[in-house]
Amino acid sequence: MSSTQKDTIKVDLGGREVTVPKGGLYDRYRMDPDLEAIARDPRVSGVDFFRKLPKIKVDSPIGPTLTPNFYYTISTARLTMLAPSHAIRARLPEELSPLEVVPGLGLVSVMFFRYDVCDIDFYTEAAVGIAVKPARHGKLGLFDLVSGLKNEHLHSYVLALPVSTEIAQVRGHDGYGFPKWVTGLDVDIDNHRTTARVANDSGGVDLSLLANTPAQRAYVSGERVGSLTSYTTIDGAWHSTLNQTNVLSAGTTRSTSGITLQLGEGRMSDDLRSLKPKRTIQFDVMTEGQAALHMPVPTSVQSRSK
Image 1 (cartoon, rainbow, N blue to C red):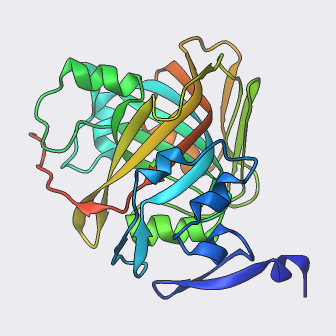
Image 2 (cartoon, rainbow, N blue to C red):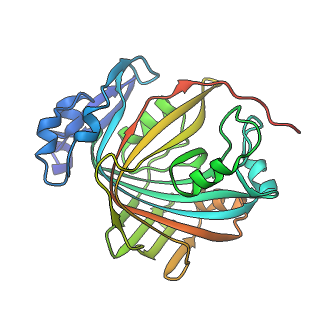
């Protein structure tokens, strides 16, 4: 038996069998963590953020589960770009509308995530997303735009969301309705450099990033908590998913100096090209943070005007 086989076990998620690390957080706790034990992990700076978020048991397409999903140590990077609204609308369901900076120009993002310690164990993730108006919000307000650029209260529709592990793919696709698939995906973020590489089906480059990390500012836990609401459909019905982020160290730059985004061949690069991005206007990096990802809930949306 190989070392990989020895170090993993099989678990069932709504009739789908996936492998997880033997002795990892999912194997030990099945989404019901011992916060005191996790607090002793040297990679985790604290667990106070999670003490105020009690988990509840819910039924879901992946079977009964506890929500929210806790992410104890994460790092993220996001490139925000301007793109023509007509290209964005062509990729959005008719019920959603782009968040526009000015008439005719919306916001799209390429994002990378590294989850070092979380309820479903280590994995990496990348995304191509579109900033949208909150469902049934009405006309754009200045507050929506400013909050979006500050990463405080974002609403999005995701076109591509590759991940590096089976459990992340099954939970994200079957449980949340996200367009997830498993691929080779490397994300490394520290105070100096931010690098990421998403592989395509043949092992080549789908999309990659090489950049200098913006200067970071430290925050006390709970001082800066942002939210992201994502819209998906599950069995034909619209749902919204809330993700709360506890920022511990982050920085932003509007300079594109030292940033190289390479588009290769694959699903992510195809999705980004379809949005016809014009230029990057902001680069956000969080070298340390935490998150609570809630299970999706049904939501009402209204078709946009033609």
